[in-house]
Length: 160
Image (cartoon, rainbow, N blue to C red; front, side, top):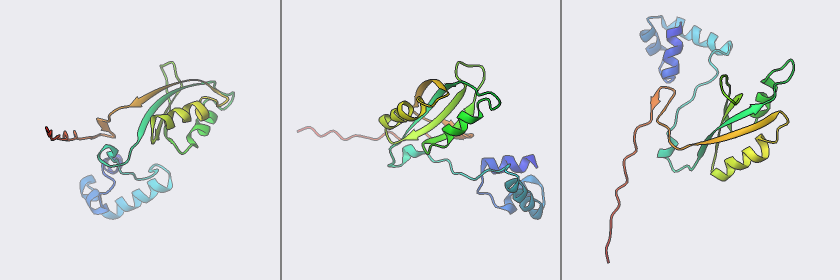
């Protein structure tokens, strides 16, 4: 039923009937599979991907590289759990092959709000030994969805 999971990941608004048709399964099989995936935490939730730049909401998203000291017996898990408890944190990933151990993605209303989070809450954590913050200026594609270009706003010039 990998096909079913792929279809749901692409568009979680599809009905069980649509999913059954697209996955070449019976509707009852699809409903049972989804219920089992949800129970087993294979499916963790359903989300819409919103292009916030097309709304009036002002927001800043940042990708923060975090260097940490792993703990004996727990590795990076304990510090990752502390970090993902903050409301501002959208995602936390354990990384390999770079100078940093974790990637933390956060959102805030302003650059200052993000900077204060890093400086006052994240960097002072006991096991954090360094951070590097990168502000996301524009999203082009996320979760296989392309963000369409915004139409340029036309300005009227009035000469007096």
